[in-house]
Image (cartoon, rainbow, N blue to C red):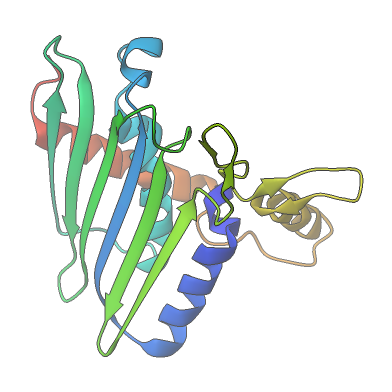
Length: 203
């Protein structure tokens, strides 16, 4: 998954490996409210929260959660515009995730993403979207919402790193990273199925 190659996430993963046991992970992924109309029926659990589930999967070393819960908020028209989920592991972290289609026009056009990780005696926060570059003219702009940049001088960012990793794997120089195998994808899909079932009927 592309976010596994995001610089901030890679650093959080490194910090967790050297600093010790994780107690809590909190992920926020909010997208524009216009998505409810533009992509009717698109559940933020499946379209947005899935990205955070891949990162959580890596941070818990593929361990299966012992308990999950999920709630949906709906618009006046009945469309799901917010998903809240909680996952817990026996003798492991408590994880909370929220994904929505709630950001107004005045916020960054691709919404906002944040991850916080707390351990014993340490904490880390990454705000990966938008990137820390703002431009002001007639209105505020965020020209680099994601860590993806392509230009004639070369590509940089998480997509470029994902492609470099693919080349290393194809050449036999690296094993497939955690979170990027077919089995990993199936596990995350099963987590989403459990969360969807925990939220109750879809209609």
